[in-house]
Length: 331
Ligand SMILES: [Zn+2]
Ligand SMILES: [Zn+2]
Ligand SMILES: [Zn+2]
Image (cartoon, rainbow, N blue to C red; front, side):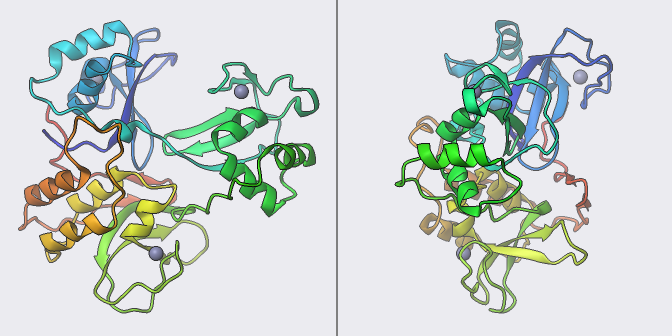
């Protein structure tokens, strides 16, 4: 099975007048089912259902296997026909899209549906009428009622309350202050905040740089994750311990897969094996797939060691990235 960068494939009815499939470049008709593929870095991609399935058999296999699949019957039928026998389904935890940050829209937002309660947002909520909270995740932005987002991400709400910024309306801050229990700790700021492009794995050339998450210095010779800052005039990178990334809210194992795929040939297998000390335990829901470390080592073994060292372009301002060639399923 070829590697794919997606954390989930969603099937939805196409509502766009003009929209082309990223794989075959042929139009997807309005009203037709389409696949919206969500990569771990970068923008969502649209495909015909069969084209999308061919890009990521493991995701389609998961939808087929799980009874509570969020795919319509028609898409499952296509998957049944296309997914090769013996395909290992994607880890269920990969479909998790943690909320990374909240913000308050500075212009009145147009009405959307709150993903938690299904009601109009902004909507009627007594003193909180008319408020919509923007929540950012790996797969984009959603709008929630103040009461709904408090249930979903109380730690983030707590952080907003403590920051006490003027960008937030007083009644929303007061509501959270009154209703979030003191036992809820503020969620730490995401280490990847304001960074863009492909993260890389590299060996620290000195002990001068500090980890952006724990603020401790990264030991000389230790493997660290690096990514470019996107704001400001200087393109200075930020660094993290691998373990700190794994503990952060931005953690998604696909990022580790990605850095292993693009690994410097000088980095040894034993150094990846040592991640057993810092990776979180396999989540209980991943009861039917091999442990993450096994998958990372398998990827490591499959990376051509004599790879032609072609620079991978990345457009930082638009957060566009090119994934390594040769790891996608071929048509
Ligand atoms: Zn297509
Ligand atoms: Zn709601
Ligand atoms: Zn750290």
